[in-house]
Length: 205
Image (cartoon, rainbow, N blue to C red; front, top):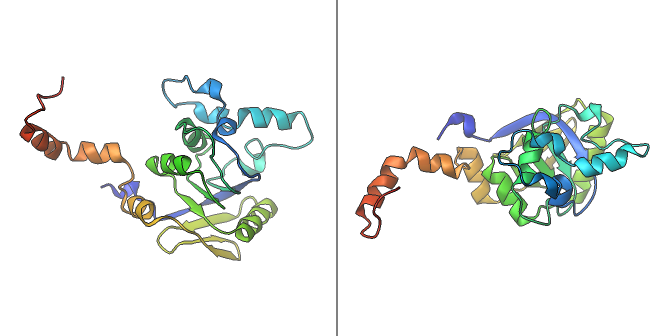
């Protein structure tokens, strides 16, 4: 377990992204799923939504220079619904300076799991809290937003709200044990010892 992999307190500018039921196809359109590696995927986050808004009078938050350095994304209900593509949280994580955490009313289960596997906490809070957080961030985009995973709260200026995270995910993130591949690699000697005792295992090829 590395201290650098622990997620206890996350602080940075916020970004409000309004709308219920934002699915993974909107987060990263299907034509980008054929990529072999995830490098550069962040540039295409919400690409179709962004292009659509560019034809009108408003800017999508991912194009709005006020939120260019956002680290905490604030969303509404059922965020990340739709297909189970890992590319969606990968794109969000790789956009701009990198989104490090998401706060919302609720998340699709598979999207939530994919985020935790990347070390991105998805914390829930109430509808009123989300609305007030979004308004606060829009008034002052440079305002630091602080997520305390241990205390279970989010702070933005004079706003303080409780946030929820399932105990298992919280423990993984706080202890730095969210990366299952890294966990296996750290325990490779123990894994090899167990494998050697299995009568049906003849070694890796």
